[in-house]
Amino acid sequence: MSHVNRRTLIAGASSAAAFGLAGCVGGQQQIAAAVPAAPSSASTSGSPATTVIGAAGDYGQMYGSIQDGKFLVAAVPPSDLNPAFRRTRVAYAGPEKPGTIVVDPQAHYLYHVQEGGQAMRYGVGVGREGFAWSGAAEIHNKQEWPDWYPPKEMLERRPDLVKQMSQLQSGLGMPGGPDNPLGARAHYLWHEGADTYFRIHGTNEPATIGSSVSSGCIRMVNQDVMDLYQTAAVGSKVIVLGNAQPTHSS
Image (cartoon, rainbow, N blue to C red; front, side, top):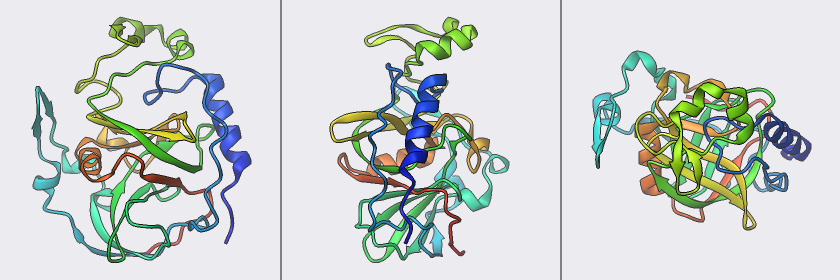
């Protein structure tokens, strides 16, 4: 069983820091390069073999509009979400304990491991070339409708974004809401007390699920990240697999 490439993680983190992360980053520019390679007990040679058990519900139930407090989460048009990346319950053959989150960037899937040899599988969007990363972390905290604080370097590259910013509690940023790039929920990934500046968050661009377009973070359809938010506990382990060709079946 191969190990996740630590050099890849560090190089990706350094590249992301140099260019400034996009929609997912917090207030600072430096990314912790000390995130460890995924442990040898993880299935780092690719996703565990999975067999579809069944959809988590009908499409309208899963991806219809949701009134969430003062904000409305828009329904996801079926044409915007490939059936392969819709929320699905699967049999799970990996060694990870229930509660663990395993992300397979190659296949664009996130698995939330459950009891009884099962997992909830979600489609995700991941980091494009130069921003990809792999390793292990944990959910340090979670936020509903999080604010977005783009780094200074990004605002310098994209001065058009400044007009969308306002002075918030932690600096210049965009308040949480339907137009915010972090979407309806965000899970903040830390390692050994240090922020990795990587997130699992929502997106208002469902058509990007299943592609590599972000600046290193893991994006989910808002309805899916809200579902994960309800079941993923603070302190949960998160493993992002390396670049080995995954092996899974449907």
